[in-house]
Length: 373
Picture 1 (tube, rainbow, N blue to C red):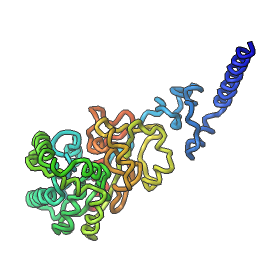
Picture 2 (picture 1 turned 135 degrees about the vertical axis):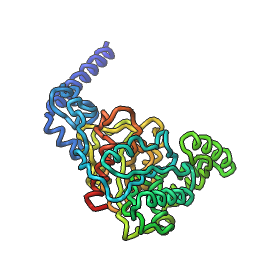
Picture 3 (picture 1 turned 90 degrees about the horizontal axis):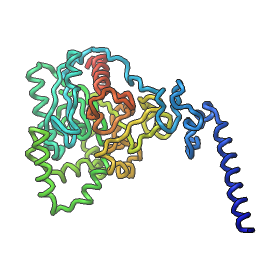
Picture 4 (picture 1 turned 90 degrees about the vertical axis):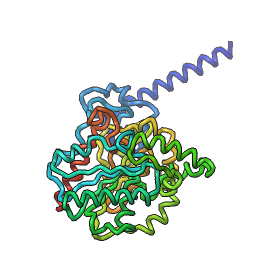
């Protein structure tokens, strides 16, 4: 009897405790929780927005753990000026890029051409060393200069493409023919994904790995018949970036700017107010309050690896924010590594974030035009 009475009292005590906690949780108002969320001190052991009926109440409660439908994403960039650049624009793809697949430019060329720009998309070996890729980039630049009669080009490069462009400018001596280089999530300080690949794949497997890369390469690019995956990974590694950066300083004749993408496996619903992230982005993170970007499935396994690298935890699924900084760093956008070039879905802008990659690139080129480039 005593045991039963003890259990009953214990259960009753727990119920009172829970009721007390619930009452305490419910008393917090929006202003208090928003203030706590803004400094990273909010208690997310429960969902105050569900408990208080704040989802869909007609107000954008950006601090809610889940997306509030009242925070419908607004377009992240104002309407572009529509001005065309003085010099032709070269869109240069990165590792595993080509004319299709998850790292191919989607509709960017056409969007820029609608503003009157001369635009060329490159195709270089998708799985090869910087030296090889840059040589092909050189041919593209020579061709567009010849056909357009222009003295220079503006290069917008995604991922590894930014390293190719730096090699072109410095080692191949094209500083007098490149007006600007804008890099989007280029691993200037390497990516831990490459270091992991080098550790996991033994040298004896290189022929098989290259054969698979060539098979994929020929399906996504007209330049995919040659592959040297190990050479590419060495160039992309955190260790390899040290020598590369020492050998490829900036050319004072070229305008260097850079951007980084931010995404996560689950979607960081509160990252627009996260001070640590804002600091990583040099206090410029172009995102709608209460919105988030979820990294695509192909990057989920690599996401923890990238975050564990020397360049910090914030990344786009493949490249860390810290590694993306080169020249004048412009800030972060809510996109993973493939969405940065438009490979999200047929829904534009992204219904979760409001990010419209075409508007983003039109804005970038409009800014180049305003600088006389």
